[in-house]
Length: 466
Image (cartoon, rainbow, N blue to C red):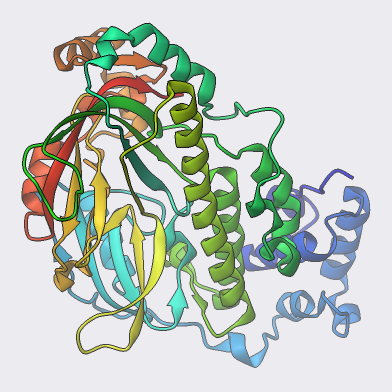
């Protein structure tokens, strides 16, 4: 049966005017009425609006009826208040950061649940929390503090093969990339029965059940925008304990992708749930949170962890397919998440929830990958454990020009010139991903010299994007 899709504008047509009532009504529909006929559901919701007193004892319309009557439950009477002054936070590479991203971070630092924060040098404007924003909370998680693409991830496979193979077998390698990768809406056919499809979360959390089909269909695929599969050269100039390889140059594959539509659905749904519970208004409503000792908070946390595992599994499939097609096994694989929340302790604190939206874990012992652009190197790094940054570093170079502006500002000829100079061949890609739309990765790395120690570099040579 086709899932019912209801939008806020349809509720406005039947007389709903309050955004909180609309959000609550949509949540009720999604939880209890998604298999019903749309006409029936709209008629029922209109009856609730016209005569809310008749639904005060209804199993799942009670809260909506109370809200429509203007008699909020005790727990909703006191809206959380923002601090008058934002808590101080450390900014790395401030000279490279759009002031609007800093202002967004200031809003986040006014939230009553936030105790500490930092802004990475690749920061730019995002939805709610800026991309590159890191915040620590007590016993609460902010869905949009994690982000839409939950568990977005980097994965680097280094092969015991000299990089000269790229030029010697360029045509073959390009064909392997095209045949074994999918981007955007493209999917593979004939999926294997992977264990991740049997996860308990699909049985325990009603909201996740209808997402399982798309979850399965998008296995092993990459997203759009800045997601990529690159073939290139891994250069290790000196020996490091963290890199069990001899110094030299190697053939390597680097991927960047996340939890696809699955993560986006989770972020949107639980933000709506949090907004309806808290009743926040204005820009702060985008940073609505769920307390972890509530049912909804526990649900989100489980869903987030599943999305993170899904992202890692997608990368595993991609690298396995490519390795098999190449007839090679990697000598070493490095990988890390961003767009996630972790339970961690900083010096002198209780356990905190560290949200890293577009930021890489950089504690002692953490190995991360920080990409530049399609025409500049990615860095393999070791974290220095700097608590001023909440043990975090940037997740990339970071945009300096928005996608829309990039499409208007740059031409394909300009991009081709930059790529030729870097010796890079592009398969796919758009003007919005022009290398010039990003900050200089060298500047970004210099700005976070206190956060990470560079170990090696990856130079892209064949880039595959949507």
